Length: 140
Image (cartoon, rainbow, N blue to C red; front, side):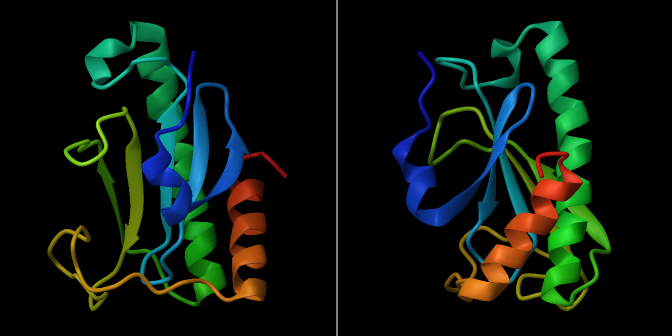
């Protein structure tokens, strides 16, 4: 049975269910950041998905890129580059990060992991970011 790893819950907000993935907004205003978690019990690596789910995941990554751009618009930042990664070193459950990047962001040009402290969304800002991401993902 599929369950979301507990590590995701305090660091992100739920966006909803896509065809394959549970989608979440990373709770850090420094970057427009979407996390996709395939709803496949026990999946740790891309190779744990069959060919059709892997193809579906790629389509959902593209949609998450649009969602990241929409969140960037809410935050008042342009997304110049999308970083996509499935690391899993800390949380082994298969998940894909789709992070909107821009020159001059707090980690540019390096990776976002381990840089500084997360900056939380304000209440109204979070509602707007969630709505923009859900609309871009076709969830709202």
